[in-house]
View (cartoon, rainbow, N blue to C red):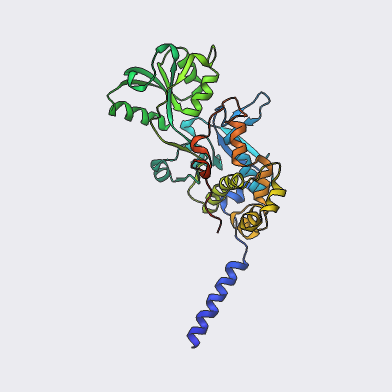
Length: 343
C-alpha cells in the first residue's frame, strides 16, 4: 500500500510540475527575442515569392510568411531582416546560423532533410518543374525537344531532375548552369538556351518580364517533378520547428473558418470552441510552449491575413501572375492544403 501511495504521489507531483512550470523558449526563439529581429533568408528576386519593389520593400508569399513568423515571435511583423540568397548559398547560410529561417522557394527532399540535418515544418506552396521556350520554336510538348540547350539554376533540384528526365527519355539535352537566376534569364532571352527549366510559378513570373512581352513565349504543360516548397529550419530546436509549422497551419486554419485580416476579432468570437480559443490567444499554455506571444495567432492574422489572402495578393487574381491555386486550394476545395487537428 505504501508503495502504491508513493507512486501516486510521485505521479501527481510530476503532473503538477509539467502544468505549473512555464515552458522555456529554445535557443532560436531566445536569440530572436534578444536581437529583436527575425533574420529570414529569401531569394534575390523571385516575383510572387520574394522580391523588392521600387521602394525597397520585400513583397511576395515567402516575404509575407517571414512577417507572419515575426508577428508570432516578436509581436511585430515589421521586425524582419530579409537576407537575399542564391540557391547555392541558402543552406550554408542556414547551417552557419546567418539566418534563423529560410523561406526561399525551397523543395522538401529526403536528401536535404537527412544529410543536411534540416527540417521542413510544412508545405507553403505546391509546384512542379516546367519548361519555357520561345513560341516561334513551334514545340508544344517535351518529346519534340529532343536536342536542346537548357538553362537551369545551380544548386537546385531542377539540375538533377533535368539530368534524370533526359536520361530516362533518351533526350540529348545539354544544361547551361548558372548561379545567378538573373544572369540565367538574360542568357535564355539572348538565345543561348532553347528552353529554361524551373518551377512553373517562377517561369510564369519570368514570362511576364520577357523582352517584347509574354506572348512570345510558352510554358509547356508537362511537369517532370513534384516540388513541395516550404520554410526550412535547422534540426536542432524542436520548439522552433513547431512554432514555424503552426504559424503556417494557422494561416490555413483561418482560411478554412473564414477568418480574414479584416474580420479576425469578430469572426473568431463567433466561431467559439477550440479553434476560437487558440486563434484568440486564450490558450497561453500553447503559446508559451511555442515561445510565441500569448496572442500570437491573432497577431499573425492581423498582420498578413489568412493563407488565401496571402495567395491571392501575391500569386493569384490580385497579382500580375494570376496563377490558379490548383493543388494549393484547401482540402475541402479539391486541394492539398489543410491544418492538422488542434486536439
